[in-house]
Image (cartoon, rainbow, N blue to C red):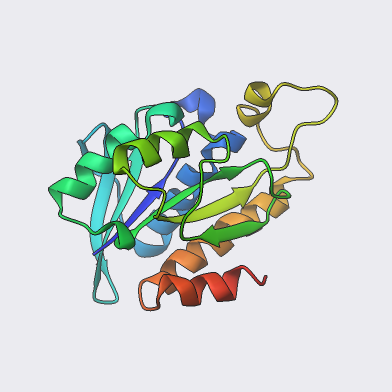
Length: 187
């Protein structure tokens, strides 16, 4: 069983913000696979399905970004999923807009959703897919920036990154994470 989590903030006012690219990837996977997030439990909304013979769970935590681990861990425990079968998708200020990077471990790098995930999983060793949103310019504060929407110029780049992230998740269903990482980190 594969467990794919997209980080973001719930609610209409956060829907298209930079901080919600993880949710956007989950939406893209739901669209591709014909799945719906029809279960609300474990402080999140999730859906399940079988994709090419692999059981998959897609989750959007409803805890708000900074408490994401409170949703991720209980579902992992309930379905007895190994941490190796988890991937967490989130925004990254240190990557250019539209660039994706996959990793198998690491620190939170200042990302509060990942800090919470590390705290609740009790390890830094879990698969991550980071989507670049770049850093703010002109003295804009980071919270205002991540809760802002993508500019018209950024839109094609972020749409491409969401598709590429979904492609990586699809590949992971039938390949090792290392193989997926080697392929997608070169793009």
